[in-house]
Image (cartoon, rainbow, N blue to C red; front, side):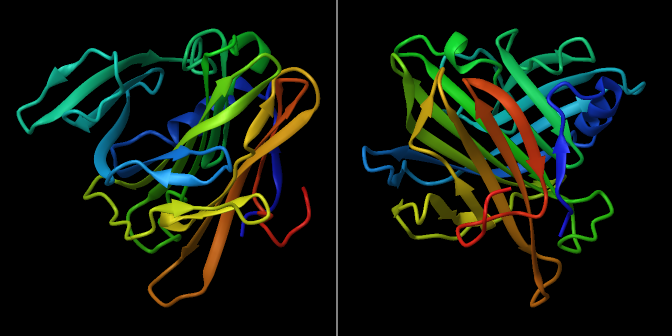
Amino acid sequence: MRPTSRVLVAGCPAEQWRNYLGLTGSWHGTWQRYAADKAAVLWRLGPSFCAVCAPTPAADGLSVRHFNRYEEGKQPPGRTGRLLEDGLFEIDFGQFDQSNFFTPFGPASKAVYGSGCAVLAPASLAASGSPGSLLAIEMILASPSSTSVLAQARQRRRLVAMYRAGDSAAELESVTTIVEQEGGVAVSVDSNAENFKPELGWYNLPGGIVAQIPPTLPLRIGGTELSMLWQYREADNGPSDSDSVSAQFSEGLLASVFQGSPKGPESSSI
């Protein structure tokens, strides 16, 4: 289990760039989308599908070109791209370097990169959340490059929570979970459940993901926290372990990001 560490929102750019490069590669993922109802129950939106997330560093390590490849028809709406010979639809999300990797979705966004983790979110919920607009918060956890975790190819877990903004708060609208493996076939994720209900504010989702996803986000006043905990085994039938990443918002601003020593439904706050 990783000890608790705080990743400073305004931390060292050079260190965060190294952490960002540590999350690059060719990640083959199983994606599952859910819709949230008024009771904060997550309902499966059709079957899962496969996609490839391929942020590719330049040879000099000074820039990264980010491509995603989706099953045709599963790509984000409104995005232009090209159909490849293997039938996947490729979207070029652009080039990132130390001048823009902190703002991956434009100047109103903010990214924080730890060792094997990241949080991508609006820099200000209020500034980004005009009534009716969508707010996206993404959390990422990756296994160590030593492959000591899982005793196989590196894996990642990602969760994207989408909120619909109102006048003073945003309501949870949908969640996407992504279970990824580097450089090979996507990880099989077996679950026949059609919906997932929160228990003490936490969802137990396929792929070993346990997530704290509040049903509402205050846009200006007060604070809230989103967390993702990844439960895994280092080998078949081996002992279980876990890691986590948490994003804390205060007065509508991304204030802190914590990693490690995960809390969960039975644990106290960090």
